[in-house]
Amino acid sequence: MAGTVLTNTGLDSFLDGAPEHRDAAFARAAEAVLGLLALRGADRATGVPEPTPGLVRQLLVEDLPTFVYAPPDELAAYPAVLGALAARFDGGRRERIAVVVAESAPDFERAMNDPGNLTWHRWYASLLRTVGADLSDPEDVRRRLAALDGAPLPDGVRRAHLMGRTALADVLLAEALTRAYVRDAETPPAAGPLLTDHAVATGIGRLAGALLDRWTAAGLAEQLAGPYARFAPGPEAFPHLVLADALLDEHLDYYGDPAAPVPPPPAIEAGPVEEDADALIAAVEELAEEEFEPYGGEAPHLLYAVYQRGCSAESVARKAAEYEDWSVDPALEDLPVPVPDAAPDAYTTPPVPELVRLLGTAELNEADRARLEGPARDLAVVLDRLAATGLVFRAGDAFGLTPRGAGVVRYLLGVRGVAAPDAAEAVAWTAPDVIAAAGGWSTSVAARVLADWLHARADTADAWSQLLAALGTVHAGTTEAAATRGLFAVLDTAGAPPEALRGALRDPVIGAYALDALRERGEPADPIQVRTSARALHVLDALPAKKGPLESRRAAFDAAAAAWPGGSAALVRAMAAADRHETERVLRPLGIALP
Image (cartoon, rainbow, N blue to C red; front, side, top):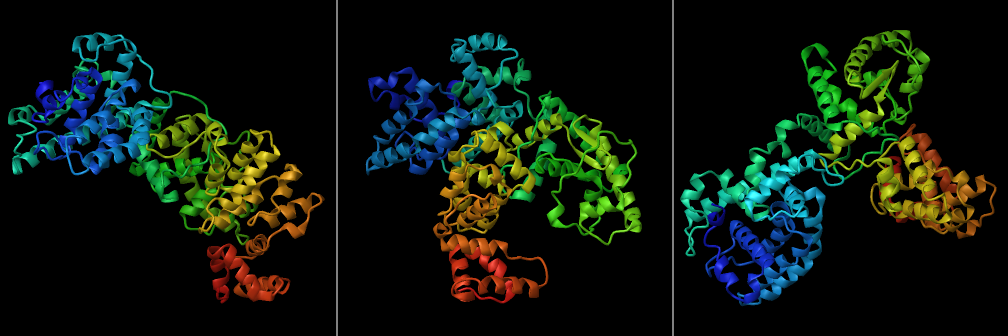
């Protein structure tokens, strides 16, 4: 069946065109290239699929890395096939396709070698080849597959990754086959049908399996669907992916982009991560039952929220107050919560002074504490059920993830494509990357990670200079520029090499910050080096943006303008030129127009 799945692709005539086309690697590449182009709707009026720039790029960067296994030494055959195919057409087709192939070549090789693109079929085909299997012999494939029981996974790839890519590939291939059959039925091509009625009658799934056998290893699809199905588990083997989806939703609500990284936990303890994740989803689903209302359904949010804090402990009372729509000072939302060494099992709301510290509301009294007692106890019940898994803890009013739990939540985020680095990955980032990420984290987490980044480079002047330069260049000209340069405040500049701070004096963004840091240390510094833009930004960032009455905020601006050469008009011009977004945000409520 495998030899007749796709008919009328012109493969035989194409391979007869030149003796070198009979090379085994070239022939394998030609079969896949012509077949996939035809499946995607390439015109076959001349007897072979006509390549177009769009189809060629899709083939190289999407279809081949999804469906086809090719060892590294055979990758060059695929662009070669496209070049030979394009040469059969006139009208400059060869040159246009050559340009697309050249532009797509780096992406093609990267995608073919990216472990994140592996499916079960592509992965096992590569393993079988490494042990000497004849990938065209289904009996040898079966025999060698039997010896791979317990075979390792690629570095950094989980079973759920492979399952997810495989499920996606199955859907994409089935859709392509179905559309090709419908397309030919509606408009019969002169070259003949791509799929026969008899072949389709056997089932789209069988057709897809036959193609995967041809494009990866003969007989592999049948073996992985039958006697060796345990080697390639499907979605039913991963119930915890429901929780992974919920955590992805939480991340998108918070950041809007899976590529925006969550903070790395300070510690991760390795464990049976899939089994732990299954235990966690079992607890989450139990909590969704009516008896755990009103907060049982909030379990995914609680897990994500504490992970997003860099896995620092959160307060039960503060979280309950948020759910009850109490006023919580935003500046205190990330305030660290002490974890007691020992605490009674029964939950008790913290005393009023501690509630004032956690919520930032000075008027709280014992009556308020009593009103919060019920909601906080209900929330503690939910957390205690999660804590029964060993992945979450609650000690008194504090709760959070255990190191093993941090590893499980990181795994769940990762299998849904969320950037979730560990501490080692974060310190390996470039200075712009770590600054870009830290801008979306709490102050305490940003301070920890940036300090770790510097320590990993022995706190050298060069490392400091890279980090300081990134403060002024990352997100420059955007609404995030102010938050980015605000990270200067979380750096422990008391231990910074003085030459790095002096070198930053002429930085057009953070020069005035560097001057302040040197003065606080009693270090010599030349204020003349600080540029006007940096001085204006320093003044702008010191103005109260949304805190306090407008009158006091306007008074703060007027005081700063009085000390600025040229007065308020000159100061506003300098601010707007340096950061128009932040200037408008701060000054517009004060009735000050920008030039």
